[in-house]
Length: 509
Image 1: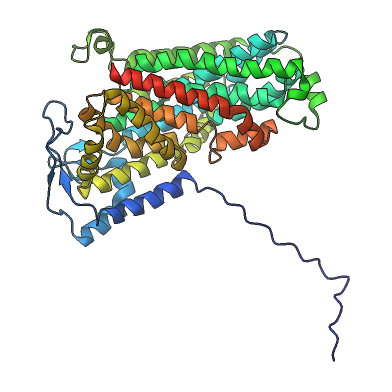
Image 2: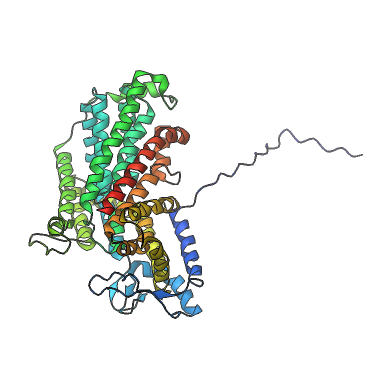
């Protein structure tokens, strides 16, 4: 019997097969699957439509009627093919059909798309000047001997970024700054994640004028971004202190007893503690002026979009003469102009300014494309005339519910949607055209549906493993995902209860 030759000692060792880890698909993949699924669903769901109120454009409850199928199979194929195009600049004609060559009102997300690019440019240029980093560093180091105050101030700063401009990926640049300071004060790395992730996350949850959540959702719901801002600000004022209390409670426990830490020390922590109380950062005159310009820009944006007369005197009041009533076109122009101004003030020069402008547009074009793809899905539903049928099925569920129950229901419905579509902008553009009209049937403000959506999105994005902000932040902080979950889940439970109660009470008023 022949013997098998022994393997040569010079032969390269065989590599063990790498186990394939499941990775949740990106928002692009999810939306592609949703687009195909909705297109196929349109072959099954009966066509139907509502009569629209001539004054408000909202569907009239009880007016739903079945209609004949308006599209041939060839037409349906073309609808699928043109979905992204219609999502960007499709025009709705007088009969409600959307297409790139129609005459009527713009239905596509071109205005929102440009606004997202413009604010992305503004944020990138502001960060490039170094003013934001140094501003946070100066505040942190001036309070470096007062740990609880430092934690509270930093969380408020991050929450302001979250509520105004949806601060998410931008937080990743602050870990290198905050980790040494927090460690030097005797806390652990979970406190770092609490300061940054919870601070910005609760701000996003209670977004007031966040363009990527509130703005996109309001546009998709057919209302102003300023509608409901009073209640959203109240949520912000109430929920941010809850997050600060929770993080401070854990921080005090860890400082008193380091063995109570929920994470393990990382290599180099001792060196980072020594680095934490380094020489104080000095802001230059240019950087101070940049910070003032950033603050005034967001303050002016809030002034420009709030419907002051309607907030003060009721929804049917005439706008004041000084009221601007700006929307996405004006806001896009504002941020483009202010981007250039900040770049000039920050001394970036012509090349630095143009390079930052292009980089900012590139960084945020992904968000814009997600919005366009999601809007394309609603175009497919609209042109196939199944949107009315889906609304009708939901109308039967909510028509006899109490307003408070409706508000809570909208919040809970959006929780799984937020997990499936982790992009807050994509989630808004996908869900609002269906969910917002339900508010008309329930006698609730559409702004309440927007608030319910963004609150659900904000809570889910505090913990979802599909979020680059969560997983990237934990990698930078050197905290395991399971350790973070044990730390943050009790807070998430508290926020779920409080948010559900607040939305239910506000909807019932």
